[in-house]
Image 1: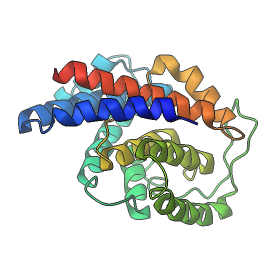
Image 2 (image 1 turned 30 degrees about the vertical axis):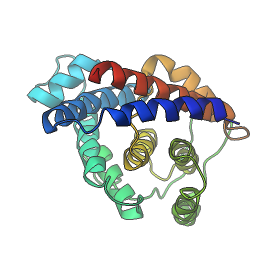
Image 3 (image 1 turned 180 degrees about the horizontal axis):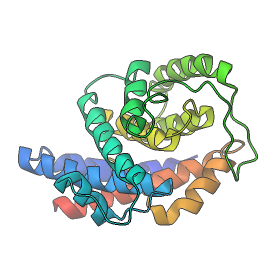
Length: 244
């Protein structure tokens, strides 16, 4: 179904691989480039009003931005730490439940330490969606099934499709009280990194398309998969522009 998109991704990946390895300084510079980009975009998708340049100042210079809330600053710092963590564990074969809980604890710990890194014990509702989330007492079982399914799908799917499916299925479970979108995108990118692929950023300007395709994915996920594949192709092209 996605043969054309995957051929384009595979062709670009071959070109990317031909330019590897980069030297240590280049790798570190690119890592910080993606840290800023992903932290800014993922937070902006959730309503954080900090700009990309403001996000950079907070992370790199440790400064605060006048007129912006403490919570928005904390979201930047938490996401930045979680970004470091997914790189630290990227050499592992697959995500574990312990890893996932740690990612959430980093993303959300500064905002609400009591709810960070633990599955939710209350029902949640999402405005704008006609679909309900699983009840709290269903979450642990669903997450156990999620990890089992992840290990099975890894053997069957193209790594980029695997990352997209993991993002979708995780968000549909919505196992935490908050921070699910950010964690879902970090999870997707962890799986991409583990497979040798690039960080994929969803531009905030495409927020409406992202949300609409994810909502539709409850019954037909083809639009959502194509949307993320398109973002991944753009990430590959951007990387080639940077490196060349």
